[in-house]
Length: 120
Image 1 (tube, helix red, strand yellow):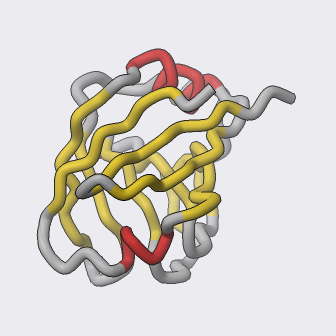
Image 2: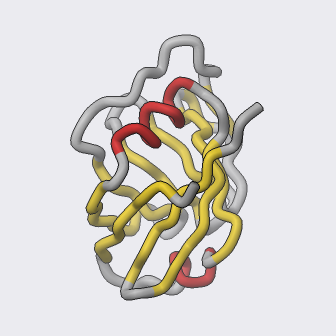
């Protein structure tokens, strides 16, 4: 199983994310580099809308995200980075996990811009 690394840069600070080997995560990797704006949602996750839809065929029907999980919410087509533990959610697809820099994300109180780029 091949894990791909993504570098997310916020205010000059680097966050490292491992993407899983799934069709949706691979499609996200192929879109990079991306300039995204994240906003807070529910005091639980930071979300951002992608320029194109990711393929979700064959993905599980949902997942139970933990802190640091990078997910796709299929109905809205948004990326979610969870900074609080959350319950099992339908149509939530696991894309990867934040390896380092989670404190940067959880410390953001306002909307923020991030650059996502291939790290390997």
